[in-house]
Image 1 (tube, rainbow, N blue to C red):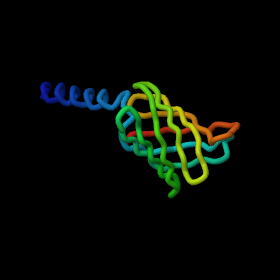
Image 2 (image 1 turned 60 degrees about the vertical axis):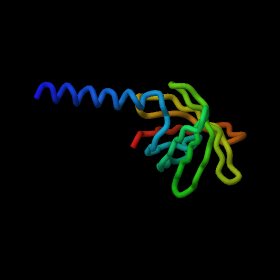
Image 3 (image 1 turned 180 degrees about the vertical axis):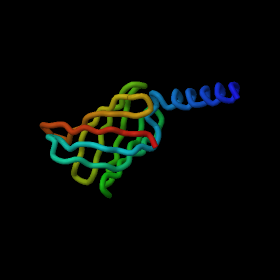
Image 4 (image 1 turned 90 degrees about the vertical axis):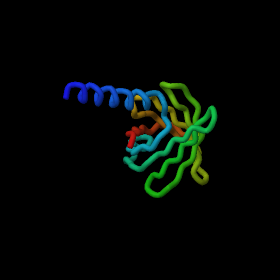
Length: 117
């Protein structure tokens, strides 16, 4: 029994470490709009595309698509949806990510948290 428990702990530690620093995956999203003007929820999918990442959000049925660059701790994403475009910056929090974002020409920032699914 002790061997099984040790093996299970090792597998769980490896699985968590495998996600740390790599934003690729599927996430549940919660956020607040710039200036505290309401909250939202949805999903995000992050795909590795060579040296960059493709980020696709679905927020209330609206699709936002972006291109990101980063390192194991940070991810910067430029995104677009229709006539809207903007910039987001996320920091790694274990297997999850949290950050701030704004629209092009924005004067305030929103906040967003991604929780790995």
